[in-house]
Image (tube, rainbow, N blue to C red; front, side, top):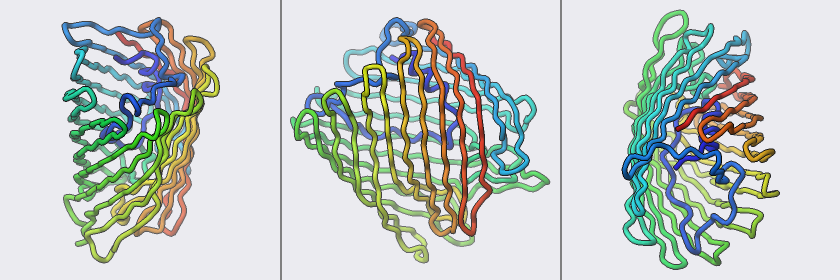
Length: 424
Protein backbone atom coordinates (compact mmCIF):
# COMPACT_ATOMS: atom_id res chain seq x y z
CA UNK A 1 0.00 0.00 0.00
CA UNK A 2 1.54 3.29 -1.05
CA UNK A 3 2.07 5.97 1.52
CA UNK A 4 0.90 9.48 0.76
CA UNK A 5 4.22 11.09 1.59
CA UNK A 6 6.04 8.78 -0.83
CA UNK A 7 3.60 9.62 -3.62
CA UNK A 8 4.21 13.31 -2.99
CA UNK A 9 7.93 12.88 -3.47
CA UNK A 10 7.32 11.07 -6.74
CA UNK A 11 4.80 13.68 -7.90
CA UNK A 12 7.19 16.51 -7.09
CA UNK A 13 10.02 15.15 -9.22
CA UNK A 14 10.77 16.96 -12.46
CA UNK A 15 10.32 15.23 -15.81
CA UNK A 16 13.21 12.83 -16.35
CA UNK A 17 15.01 11.81 -19.48
CA UNK A 18 13.62 8.70 -21.08
CA UNK A 19 11.62 6.01 -19.35
CA UNK A 20 12.19 4.17 -16.13
CA UNK A 21 13.95 0.88 -16.68
CA UNK A 22 12.49 -2.52 -15.95
CA UNK A 23 12.86 -3.26 -12.22
CA UNK A 24 16.18 -4.77 -11.21
CA UNK A 25 16.29 -8.23 -9.70
CA UNK A 26 15.67 -8.40 -5.93
CA UNK A 27 18.72 -7.50 -3.91
CA UNK A 28 17.43 -8.10 -0.39
CA UNK A 29 15.67 -11.01 1.23
CA UNK A 30 14.67 -12.11 4.68
CA UNK A 31 16.67 -13.62 7.53
CA UNK A 32 20.39 -13.19 6.92
CA UNK A 33 19.73 -10.83 4.00
CA UNK A 34 17.21 -8.45 5.60
CA UNK A 35 18.24 -4.81 5.35
CA UNK A 36 15.26 -3.27 7.14
CA UNK A 37 16.78 -2.41 10.48
CA UNK A 38 16.68 1.28 9.65
CA UNK A 39 14.08 3.38 7.84
CA UNK A 40 14.88 6.61 6.00
CA UNK A 41 12.99 9.84 6.59
CA UNK A 42 11.03 9.56 3.34
CA UNK A 43 10.08 5.91 3.88
CA UNK A 44 9.17 6.17 7.55
CA UNK A 45 5.55 5.07 8.24
CA UNK A 46 3.23 7.92 9.16
CA UNK A 47 -0.13 6.25 9.84
CA UNK A 48 -1.83 9.54 10.61
CA UNK A 49 -0.90 10.79 7.11
CA UNK A 50 -1.43 7.54 5.21
CA UNK A 51 -4.34 7.02 2.88
CA UNK A 52 -5.91 3.59 3.17
CA UNK A 53 -7.42 3.52 -0.31
CA UNK A 54 -10.76 1.94 -1.18
CA UNK A 55 -11.17 -1.66 -0.08
CA UNK A 56 -12.89 -3.86 -2.66
CA UNK A 57 -12.82 -7.48 -1.59
CA UNK A 58 -9.23 -8.71 -1.63
CA UNK A 59 -7.98 -5.58 -3.43
CA UNK A 60 -7.25 -1.97 -2.49
CA UNK A 61 -7.91 0.75 -5.07
CA UNK A 62 -5.88 3.94 -4.71
CA UNK A 63 -6.86 6.78 -7.06
CA UNK A 64 -4.81 9.98 -7.05
CA UNK A 65 -4.61 13.34 -8.79
CA UNK A 66 -1.49 15.48 -9.01
CA UNK A 67 -1.87 19.13 -10.04
CA UNK A 68 1.42 20.89 -10.67
CA UNK A 69 2.23 24.49 -11.58
CA UNK A 70 5.74 24.96 -12.90
CA UNK A 71 7.84 27.72 -14.43
CA UNK A 72 11.04 27.44 -16.47
CA UNK A 73 13.45 30.02 -17.85
CA UNK A 74 14.57 27.81 -20.77
CA UNK A 75 11.70 25.89 -22.36
CA UNK A 76 13.74 24.55 -25.30
CA UNK A 77 16.98 23.89 -23.36
CA UNK A 78 19.00 26.20 -25.65
CA UNK A 79 22.29 28.02 -25.05
CA UNK A 80 21.01 31.36 -26.42
CA UNK A 81 17.63 33.03 -26.92
CA UNK A 82 16.15 31.24 -23.90
CA UNK A 83 12.37 31.35 -23.62
CA UNK A 84 10.63 31.52 -20.23
CA UNK A 85 7.18 30.06 -19.73
CA UNK A 86 4.79 28.55 -17.22
CA UNK A 87 2.88 25.31 -17.58
CA UNK A 88 0.39 23.15 -15.74
CA UNK A 89 0.66 19.39 -15.38
CA UNK A 90 -2.31 17.20 -14.48
CA UNK A 91 -1.65 13.56 -13.56
CA UNK A 92 -4.66 11.39 -12.75
CA UNK A 93 -3.56 7.91 -11.71
CA UNK A 94 -4.87 4.74 -10.15
CA UNK A 95 -3.22 1.69 -8.63
CA UNK A 96 -4.90 -1.55 -7.60
CA UNK A 97 -3.14 -3.99 -5.32
CA UNK A 98 -4.02 -7.29 -3.72
CA UNK A 99 -4.12 -7.81 0.05
CA UNK A 100 -3.56 -11.56 -0.02
CA UNK A 101 -1.42 -13.12 2.71
CA UNK A 102 0.56 -14.90 -0.03
CA UNK A 103 1.26 -13.87 -3.61
CA UNK A 104 0.72 -10.36 -5.00
CA UNK A 105 -1.02 -8.79 -7.97
CA UNK A 106 -0.99 -5.12 -8.95
CA UNK A 107 -2.27 -2.93 -11.76
CA UNK A 108 -1.44 0.73 -12.34
CA UNK A 109 -2.31 3.38 -14.89
CA UNK A 110 -1.64 7.10 -15.26
CA UNK A 111 -2.08 9.96 -17.72
CA UNK A 112 0.12 13.09 -17.70
CA UNK A 113 -1.08 16.22 -19.49
CA UNK A 114 1.36 19.16 -19.97
CA UNK A 115 -0.22 22.48 -20.92
CA UNK A 116 2.02 25.52 -21.56
CA UNK A 117 0.99 29.15 -21.36
CA UNK A 118 2.81 30.36 -24.51
CA UNK A 119 4.94 27.53 -25.95
CA UNK A 120 2.05 25.56 -27.41
CA UNK A 121 4.40 23.24 -29.32
CA UNK A 122 5.35 21.71 -25.94
CA UNK A 123 1.77 20.72 -25.05
CA UNK A 124 1.60 16.94 -24.86
CA UNK A 125 -0.03 13.96 -23.22
CA UNK A 126 1.81 10.90 -21.88
CA UNK A 127 0.28 7.75 -20.48
CA UNK A 128 1.36 4.49 -18.90
CA UNK A 129 -0.33 1.23 -17.92
CA UNK A 130 1.11 -1.89 -16.37
CA UNK A 131 0.49 -5.07 -14.44
CA UNK A 132 2.84 -6.99 -12.17
CA UNK A 133 2.63 -9.94 -9.85
CA UNK A 134 4.49 -12.31 -7.57
CA UNK A 135 3.97 -15.98 -6.81
CA UNK A 136 5.34 -17.17 -3.46
CA UNK A 137 6.52 -20.68 -4.27
CA UNK A 138 8.02 -21.43 -0.86
CA UNK A 139 8.66 -19.40 2.26
CA UNK A 140 12.06 -18.31 0.96
CA UNK A 141 11.48 -18.25 -2.79
CA UNK A 142 9.24 -16.51 -5.29
CA UNK A 143 8.72 -15.81 -8.98
CA UNK A 144 7.71 -12.33 -10.14
CA UNK A 145 6.99 -10.66 -13.44
CA UNK A 146 5.21 -7.85 -15.18
CA UNK A 147 4.40 -6.05 -18.40
CA UNK A 148 3.80 -2.39 -19.09
CA UNK A 149 3.36 0.05 -21.95
CA UNK A 150 4.29 3.75 -21.97
CA UNK A 151 3.74 6.48 -24.51
CA UNK A 152 5.99 9.43 -23.72
CA UNK A 153 8.04 12.31 -25.08
CA UNK A 154 11.76 12.98 -24.89
CA UNK A 155 12.79 16.00 -22.78
CA UNK A 156 14.30 18.93 -24.67
CA UNK A 157 17.49 18.57 -22.66
CA UNK A 158 18.07 14.96 -23.65
CA UNK A 159 21.49 14.20 -25.14
CA UNK A 160 19.83 12.77 -28.26
CA UNK A 161 17.23 15.52 -28.68
CA UNK A 162 17.09 17.13 -32.14
CA UNK A 163 17.92 20.84 -31.84
CA UNK A 164 15.67 21.87 -34.73
CA UNK A 165 12.72 19.71 -33.68
CA UNK A 166 9.45 21.65 -33.77
CA UNK A 167 8.07 19.45 -30.98
CA UNK A 168 9.44 17.06 -28.35
CA UNK A 169 10.15 13.66 -29.88
CA UNK A 170 7.45 11.09 -29.09
CA UNK A 171 8.20 7.42 -28.48
CA UNK A 172 6.57 4.26 -27.17
CA UNK A 173 8.11 1.67 -24.89
CA UNK A 174 6.74 -1.81 -24.31
CA UNK A 175 8.39 -3.80 -21.52
CA UNK A 176 8.14 -7.22 -19.93
CA UNK A 177 10.18 -9.04 -17.31
CA UNK A 178 10.20 -12.25 -15.31
CA UNK A 179 12.42 -13.01 -12.36
CA UNK A 180 12.93 -15.45 -9.51
CA UNK A 181 14.65 -15.49 -6.13
CA UNK A 182 15.53 -18.31 -3.72
CA UNK A 183 17.20 -18.18 -0.32
CA UNK A 184 19.22 -21.11 1.05
CA UNK A 185 20.31 -20.32 4.59
CA UNK A 186 23.40 -18.18 3.94
CA UNK A 187 23.02 -18.08 0.13
CA UNK A 188 20.58 -15.99 -1.91
CA UNK A 189 20.31 -16.47 -5.67
CA UNK A 190 18.20 -14.41 -8.04
CA UNK A 191 17.79 -13.90 -11.75
CA UNK A 192 15.76 -11.88 -14.21
CA UNK A 193 15.08 -11.65 -17.94
CA UNK A 194 13.67 -8.41 -19.34
CA UNK A 195 12.71 -7.16 -22.80
CA UNK A 196 12.20 -3.51 -23.77
CA UNK A 197 11.07 -2.41 -27.22
CA UNK A 198 11.42 1.24 -28.26
CA UNK A 199 9.59 2.89 -31.16
CA UNK A 200 10.40 6.55 -31.92
CA UNK A 201 8.20 8.82 -34.04
CA UNK A 202 9.60 11.09 -36.75
CA UNK A 203 9.48 14.78 -35.85
CA UNK A 204 8.76 17.91 -37.88
CA UNK A 205 11.67 20.36 -38.07
CA UNK A 206 11.61 24.10 -37.61
CA UNK A 207 11.69 25.68 -41.10
CA UNK A 208 10.33 22.56 -42.79
CA UNK A 209 11.34 18.99 -43.34
CA UNK A 210 11.14 15.89 -41.16
CA UNK A 211 13.69 14.46 -38.74
CA UNK A 212 13.75 10.69 -39.28
CA UNK A 213 13.94 8.82 -35.96
CA UNK A 214 13.53 5.27 -37.24
CA UNK A 215 17.24 4.64 -36.71
CA UNK A 216 16.59 4.71 -32.94
CA UNK A 217 13.99 1.92 -32.93
CA UNK A 218 15.42 -1.07 -31.14
CA UNK A 219 14.82 -4.05 -28.86
CA UNK A 220 16.83 -4.47 -25.66
CA UNK A 221 17.12 -7.89 -24.01
CA UNK A 222 18.75 -8.15 -20.59
CA UNK A 223 19.62 -11.31 -18.65
CA UNK A 224 20.84 -10.78 -15.11
CA UNK A 225 21.99 -13.23 -12.45
CA UNK A 226 23.12 -12.61 -8.92
CA UNK A 227 24.33 -14.66 -5.94
CA UNK A 228 24.80 -13.40 -2.38
CA UNK A 229 26.63 -15.05 0.52
CA UNK A 230 25.80 -13.86 4.04
CA UNK A 231 28.96 -13.49 6.10
CA UNK A 232 26.77 -12.28 8.99
CA UNK A 233 23.24 -10.89 9.45
CA UNK A 234 24.76 -7.45 8.78
CA UNK A 235 27.07 -8.19 5.85
CA UNK A 236 26.86 -10.20 2.64
CA UNK A 237 29.07 -10.49 -0.42
CA UNK A 238 27.70 -10.82 -3.95
CA UNK A 239 28.61 -11.42 -7.56
CA UNK A 240 26.44 -10.14 -10.41
CA UNK A 241 26.51 -10.87 -14.16
CA UNK A 242 24.46 -8.91 -16.68
CA UNK A 243 24.26 -9.58 -20.40
CA UNK A 244 22.53 -6.88 -22.46
CA UNK A 245 21.77 -7.11 -26.16
CA UNK A 246 20.67 -4.10 -28.22
CA UNK A 247 19.21 -4.96 -31.62
CA UNK A 248 18.31 -2.06 -33.93
CA UNK A 249 15.54 -2.31 -36.52
CA UNK A 250 17.66 -0.68 -39.22
CA UNK A 251 21.26 0.18 -40.07
CA UNK A 252 22.61 3.64 -40.88
CA UNK A 253 24.64 3.97 -44.05
CA UNK A 254 25.09 0.22 -44.08
CA UNK A 255 26.61 0.25 -40.58
CA UNK A 256 25.06 -2.25 -38.15
CA UNK A 257 24.86 -0.86 -34.60
CA UNK A 258 23.72 -4.03 -32.81
CA UNK A 259 25.81 -4.78 -29.74
CA UNK A 260 26.21 -7.03 -26.70
CA UNK A 261 27.46 -5.83 -23.33
CA UNK A 262 28.61 -8.22 -20.61
CA UNK A 263 29.00 -6.74 -17.13
CA UNK A 264 30.58 -8.54 -14.19
CA UNK A 265 30.61 -7.03 -10.71
CA UNK A 266 31.44 -8.16 -7.21
CA UNK A 267 30.66 -6.30 -4.03
CA UNK A 268 29.28 -6.11 -0.54
CA UNK A 269 25.87 -5.35 0.96
CA UNK A 270 25.89 -4.02 4.51
CA UNK A 271 23.73 -2.81 7.39
CA UNK A 272 26.06 -1.33 10.00
CA UNK A 273 24.27 -0.98 13.36
CA UNK A 274 21.82 1.93 13.20
CA UNK A 275 24.14 4.16 11.16
CA UNK A 276 24.57 3.06 7.55
CA UNK A 277 22.84 0.73 5.07
CA UNK A 278 24.04 0.24 1.54
CA UNK A 279 25.65 -1.74 -1.22
CA UNK A 280 28.78 -1.29 -3.33
CA UNK A 281 29.82 -3.23 -6.41
CA UNK A 282 32.76 -2.88 -8.79
CA UNK A 283 33.85 -4.76 -11.90
CA UNK A 284 34.18 -4.45 -15.67
CA UNK A 285 31.95 -4.28 -18.70
CA UNK A 286 32.82 -5.42 -22.19
CA UNK A 287 30.86 -4.32 -25.27
CA UNK A 288 31.12 -6.19 -28.57
CA UNK A 289 29.73 -4.51 -31.70
CA UNK A 290 28.36 -6.51 -34.62
CA UNK A 291 30.09 -4.06 -36.96
CA UNK A 292 33.66 -5.41 -37.15
CA UNK A 293 35.07 -1.93 -37.75
CA UNK A 294 34.01 -0.85 -34.27
CA UNK A 295 35.76 -3.71 -32.50
CA UNK A 296 35.01 -3.95 -28.80
CA UNK A 297 35.27 -1.84 -25.68
CA UNK A 298 36.31 -2.83 -22.15
CA UNK A 299 35.93 -0.42 -19.26
CA UNK A 300 35.40 -0.05 -15.53
CA UNK A 301 31.93 -0.68 -14.14
CA UNK A 302 30.65 0.19 -10.69
CA UNK A 303 27.45 0.79 -8.79
CA UNK A 304 26.64 1.74 -5.24
CA UNK A 305 24.22 3.43 -2.93
CA UNK A 306 24.12 4.04 0.80
CA UNK A 307 21.98 5.74 3.41
CA UNK A 308 23.49 7.36 6.49
CA UNK A 309 21.04 7.87 9.34
CA UNK A 310 22.65 10.93 10.86
CA UNK A 311 19.82 11.26 13.38
CA UNK A 312 16.31 9.75 13.53
CA UNK A 313 15.17 12.95 11.77
CA UNK A 314 17.89 13.27 9.09
CA UNK A 315 18.93 10.88 6.34
CA UNK A 316 21.83 11.39 3.94
CA UNK A 317 21.85 9.30 0.74
CA UNK A 318 24.66 8.84 -1.77
CA UNK A 319 24.83 6.89 -5.05
CA UNK A 320 27.22 6.27 -7.91
CA UNK A 321 27.23 4.19 -11.09
CA UNK A 322 29.10 3.62 -14.36
CA UNK A 323 27.38 1.76 -17.17
CA UNK A 324 27.25 1.36 -20.96
CA UNK A 325 23.95 2.12 -22.72
CA UNK A 326 22.40 2.98 -26.07
CA UNK A 327 23.35 6.50 -27.15
CA UNK A 328 20.33 7.51 -29.24
CA UNK A 329 22.76 9.31 -31.59
CA UNK A 330 23.32 7.95 -35.09
CA UNK A 331 27.08 8.55 -35.13
CA UNK A 332 27.72 7.06 -31.68
CA UNK A 333 27.75 3.31 -31.19
CA UNK A 334 27.04 3.54 -27.45
CA UNK A 335 27.40 5.81 -24.46
CA UNK A 336 29.34 5.28 -21.23
CA UNK A 337 27.45 6.99 -18.42
CA UNK A 338 29.15 7.86 -15.14
CA UNK A 339 27.07 9.46 -12.40
CA UNK A 340 27.36 10.41 -8.74
CA UNK A 341 24.79 12.02 -6.49
CA UNK A 342 23.83 12.85 -2.92
CA UNK A 343 20.63 13.84 -1.13
CA UNK A 344 19.58 15.03 2.32
CA UNK A 345 16.09 14.60 3.81
CA UNK A 346 15.17 16.20 7.13
CA UNK A 347 11.94 15.81 9.08
CA UNK A 348 11.43 19.32 10.44
CA UNK A 349 7.96 18.40 11.68
CA UNK A 350 6.09 15.13 11.63
CA UNK A 351 4.30 16.31 8.48
CA UNK A 352 6.96 18.65 7.04
CA UNK A 353 9.95 17.13 5.23
CA UNK A 354 12.73 19.24 3.70
CA UNK A 355 14.84 17.75 0.92
CA UNK A 356 17.86 18.67 -1.19
CA UNK A 357 19.86 16.74 -3.79
CA UNK A 358 22.74 17.24 -6.19
CA UNK A 359 24.04 15.04 -9.00
CA UNK A 360 26.65 14.96 -11.75
CA UNK A 361 26.55 12.79 -14.89
CA UNK A 362 29.13 12.38 -17.64
CA UNK A 363 28.05 10.84 -20.96
CA UNK A 364 30.98 9.80 -23.17
CA UNK A 365 29.99 8.68 -26.67
CA UNK A 366 31.75 5.75 -28.33
CA UNK A 367 32.86 6.50 -31.90
CA UNK A 368 32.07 10.20 -31.55
CA UNK A 369 34.29 12.97 -30.18
CA UNK A 370 31.75 14.26 -27.69
CA UNK A 371 31.32 14.23 -23.92
CA UNK A 372 28.44 15.82 -22.00
CA UNK A 373 28.61 16.94 -18.38
CA UNK A 374 25.26 17.48 -16.67
CA UNK A 375 24.71 18.96 -13.20
CA UNK A 376 21.39 18.93 -11.35
CA UNK A 377 20.38 20.52 -8.06
CA UNK A 378 17.05 20.32 -6.23
CA UNK A 379 15.80 22.01 -3.09
CA UNK A 380 12.27 21.66 -1.74
CA UNK A 381 9.85 20.58 0.91
CA UNK A 382 6.72 18.49 1.35
CA UNK A 383 3.88 19.39 3.70
CA UNK A 384 1.36 16.66 4.51
CA UNK A 385 -1.99 18.32 5.21
CA UNK A 386 -3.88 15.16 6.18
CA UNK A 387 -4.34 11.55 5.04
CA UNK A 388 -5.48 12.61 1.59
CA UNK A 389 -3.81 15.90 0.69
CA UNK A 390 -0.23 17.11 0.52
CA UNK A 391 1.73 19.99 -1.01
CA UNK A 392 5.26 20.01 -2.42
CA UNK A 393 7.35 23.02 -3.48
CA UNK A 394 10.66 22.64 -5.33
CA UNK A 395 13.39 24.70 -6.98
CA UNK A 396 15.65 22.87 -9.44
CA UNK A 397 18.55 23.76 -11.69
CA UNK A 398 19.94 21.73 -14.60
CA UNK A 399 23.09 22.62 -16.50
CA UNK A 400 24.84 20.82 -19.36
CA UNK A 401 28.25 21.45 -20.91
CA UNK A 402 29.38 19.60 -24.02
CA UNK A 403 32.96 19.21 -25.24
CA UNK A 404 34.77 17.63 -28.19
CA UNK A 405 34.78 18.12 -31.96
CA UNK A 406 31.12 17.04 -32.13
CA UNK A 407 30.04 19.00 -29.05
CA UNK A 408 26.47 20.27 -28.89
CA UNK A 409 25.27 23.54 -27.39
CA UNK A 410 24.98 23.54 -23.62
CA UNK A 411 22.13 24.97 -21.58
CA UNK A 412 21.03 26.14 -18.14
CA UNK A 413 17.49 25.64 -16.89
CA UNK A 414 15.98 26.96 -13.64
CA UNK A 415 12.57 25.73 -12.54
CA UNK A 416 10.13 26.48 -9.75
CA UNK A 417 7.31 24.08 -9.02
CA UNK A 418 4.43 23.75 -6.60
CA UNK A 419 2.42 20.55 -6.58
CA UNK A 420 -0.85 19.58 -4.93
CA UNK A 421 -1.52 15.86 -4.54
CA UNK A 422 -4.83 14.29 -3.63
CA UNK A 423 -5.00 10.58 -2.89
CA UNK A 424 -7.84 8.44 -1.66
